Length: 75
Length: 226
Image (cartoon, rainbow over all chains, first blue to last red; front, side):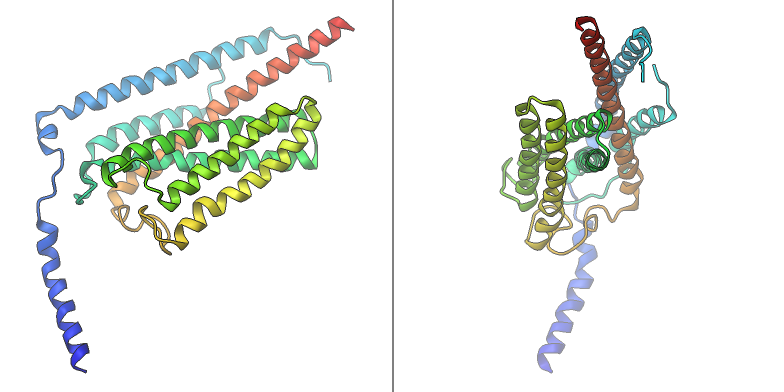
């Protein structure tokens, strides 16, 4: 009985303290964000991604061209 | 260029992933800190891989039911893209693990399982490369491909959940409970998965079409020689 009461007390304490732990400052890249430097990262990634997509598009076009040049398949 | 709506959707979703993945709010958690954003890029690789391997397996089953060169082409091309996603997933995972777990290779059950699954799929390509006859190669590799998919499921989805793993969602729980509880993260994460799956499909169809052209040319050359 005593043990359960103790356990409940501990549980209650943990529950009360939990928001306190949550409020502790977790280090994030806030300075980078407020500087606006995050946009540098985003734009670099976008350029790389769009470049790769452009490459895929070109390849797609070239393959379509090759498909057109082939004579019709006899089947 | 075969312009299809899904190619446009793929690119749109991935551009959205890059924008949202870096600019939207994320939960402030200890240890992972800002690297939680890697989830938007590392995990979709695995989703992409599993879907690519699943499609590959479906075409292998189709091949065994009705042998045709086209089915074999689909199976090998999707397996190829799946392997690419898997390799990217493991490399990005190692970079992330180095930061959050302290070393790139931690012997984490999911990490080991993924590595073994990739080796199983490497063997698929070794098998294909070692058989000369086209029909034999297609049939043998179709059978092996089904086995490989069957081996991948327990290695990635079951064993890591039976033991304790440092990946979230391990040790009996289904995934996405710890980090992903945040509904804001789902807003970027799910579109990212769909986007990568569609982009993988695009890459696979390019390979399939290239192989078709290659076969066509080979046929023409055969006719010339005869």
